[in-house]
Image (tube, rainbow, N blue to C red; front, side, top):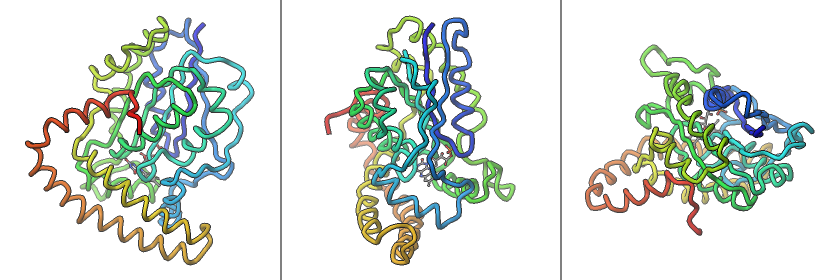
Length: 308
Ligand SMILES: Cc1cc2nc3c(=O)[nH]c(=O)nc-3n(C[C@H](O)[C@H](O)[C@H](O)COP(=O)(O)O)c2cc1C
């Protein structure tokens, strides 16, 4: 019997639906699935208020862990043939619960020398978050063998509006009858079933060496080159903001609250003014950059980690 551990965090249930579909065709006679939901001791309330949403920024971006509930004894008792890690992005980084798990003692035991498939479901900016996850997995001596990325396929600025409607209103519904549904589409969530067979085959053979190639052939990852540039620049600017805001103290400090309001306005400015300018520059420089773009697409679709 092969043992598979599915580890995830999800406020809305979107990731759990995706993970259930990805594991739907696993051979029930040969593969046993154990589920572990990461639970912070003080969980993040959903839906968010604006204040809590922006307040999560410094700790998300600086990857500061929070306390988690310990996994059940049953989860810790087995040695796994494969771990599937489902995560979401908060502020261009793995979300606080996921980052906290990857820095925890149980993760050191569960992931050491174990093949891992990462499944990210987010708005659309996951490239640098995945690099951070790759580094955390390397530190755990885990073996990243597969990556699947599911995103909101609508235009960047539309997905910003609709995700806010979802995050603050709590419902994954169309907004005002004109904006589309936020997040990963129902079609893409259902379509995640196609990843089940190649993963099941690798579990059976114990050979994960060509799994990512097989996953890529069926559209597991679609790297948007414009978003690579935005993500890299965003990380540079966020590092300055996070440093500045974290110096103002904990969440209850008035100084920190004031700076978070400024950060909120900066974010709106970046999304509505800077991002479109970056897009125009991207279009103008597209042809001369085509070689670099190809190399970047190949690397970010892979499970390799460049030494950085
Ligand atoms: C505080 C916060 C920050 C987020 N930042 C990003 C981001 O930087 N990039 C992105 O693609 N999605 C971002 N998202 C969207 C999430 O990755 C995720 O898709 C969404 O919150 C669905 O929640 P769930 O996966 O917990 O069910 C953010 C969401 C929250 C709540």
